Image (cartoon, rainbow, N blue to C red; front, side):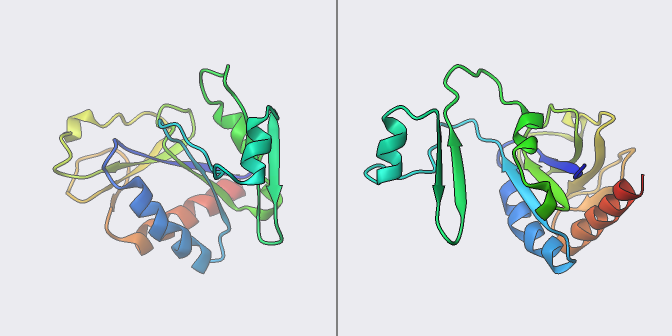
Amino acid sequence: MTPILAIAAWSGTGKTTLLKGLIPALRERGIRPGLIKHTHHRMDVDTPGKDSYELRKAGAAQTLVASSERWALMTETPQQETLDLAYLVSRMDHSTLDVVLVEGFKHEPVSKILLFRAGTGHSEADLVLDEHVIAVASDTALNAVVPVLDLNDIAGIACFIAEWIKAHNER
């Protein structure tokens, strides 16, 4: 099974910024990352006025849009109250992945790196270090029972993740 690693933090801590640097850093190490991003906002990956948008809005429960460069499957879930991370991960093509990175889903029982940034209105005491937290990436020194990584050292975090994937695959 492809390892799953969540990057979890409060809003405004820099999850997306970290991932934008981390994904190419992992690829440079030969690691093929997939990504699942959680959002609390209404979202639409299609464009109003395009044929695919109009056909989906006509009532299709699932719409797959494909080109020679990429494809996307959109599934309507109006009655689903909560997202099922395991189901979402199962929809990915694991033959092309070495790790599934997850932005958000901080309450899911998956391995995670918590982010902590000084000045975001939270204190070290607010960090919930449950059994799934493998590290904390922070821009300030912390006293934690797990490794504390430098939030601004993308290469160091990528190296930590590469070692974690290696250890996961050796189990």
